[in-house]
Amino acid sequence: MLKDNFETVEKNVATACKRAGRDRSEVTLIAVSKTKPVEMLREVYDAGARDFGENKVQEICEKYDQLPSDIKWHMIGHLQRNKVKQVIDKAALIHSVDSYRLAQEISVQAQKKGLTIPILVEVNIAGEESKFGISAEDTIQLVEEISVLPNLKIQGLMTIAPYVVDAEENRLYFRQIKQLSVDIKNKNIDNVSMDILSMGMTGDYEVAIEEGATMVRVGTGIFGARNYNTKER
Ligand SMILES: *Cc1c(COP(=O)(O)O)cnc(C)c1O
Image 1 (cartoon, rainbow, N blue to C red):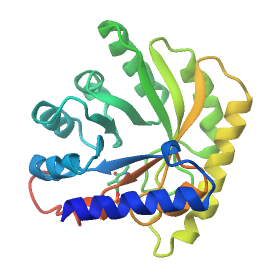
Image 2 (image 1 turned 180 degrees about the vertical axis):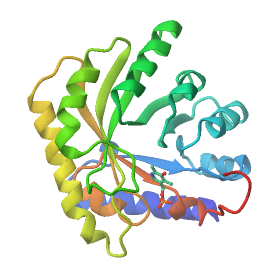
Image 3 (image 1 turned 135 degrees about the vertical axis):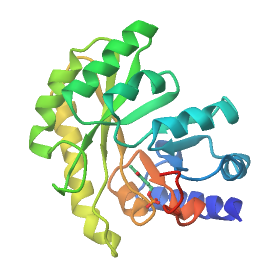
């Protein structure tokens, strides 16, 4: 059943790419597996998924040890500075950098381990109070500040669009963040590429792909609804 879900989402991704005149290889589908048990991840892995998204450090660490090593783990949740050192050698990409202080801690820990860590800067594109992320206005300055830190590489931007019933309502936000990434790219800042745009979730990933997403993060559409009543979180 999870295999069917994954294949349906995969097909929708391919169709959206086609509609937008993009190659399927331009978009990475991340299976967002937070709160889900490893057996379910294994099913989706067997269906072909190799990119998994988690929002808690402890959960990445536990699942990392139990699942195949060719999985790329994406840290997509708010990251506390005191947990950076546990996750930096496990996450293939940290999507949720939204402050200089967090970037600085990642840089310090990366230097200790002799790693260069790819990161995205999280932008709160709709300015929602309930969400993490830096405002669109402050993004360029933050990118410039972070770009000089050693052992880090800014590879793009990430956003969590508002929860909407009609995905079309988010099209404007996706366009705005795409434009912001183009503006940053045009500044040619050393050590900054804008190759990645992580946007689009179960409700709106197809629209996000049409507007330039290179990574979509799909949880519910693959794994089903999450149950938050357990002590997992
Ligand atoms: C949970 C989560 C998702 C997946 O959301 P769905 O609506 O279940 O697809 C995507 N991105 C982030 C940052 C999340 O925390």
